[in-house]
Length: 76
Image 1 (cartoon, rainbow, N blue to C red):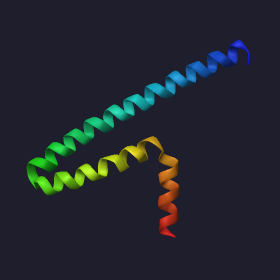
Image 2 (cartoon, rainbow, N blue to C red):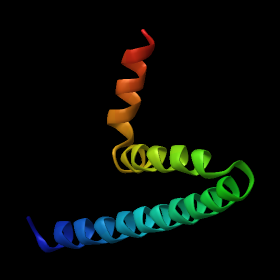
Image 3 (cartoon, rainbow, N blue to C red):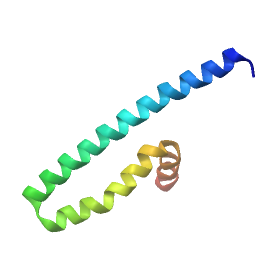
Image 4 (cartoon, rainbow, N blue to C red):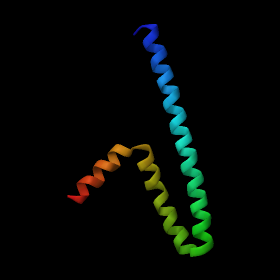
């Protein structure tokens, strides 16, 4: 690879990293707010159920293509 390709790859990596980090921060803030609302209004059983869904949501956030393909296969 030449120097221009190296700079392009480095810039794309930094841009992608920034977007992914901001997405994860926004998702985490949303989960905290959802947890507070769920716990306040629906009780302990609801917050426990919410806690089980958070890892799946993280998986879908990190690997959106694989979860989309799996869900499409389960519909057929």
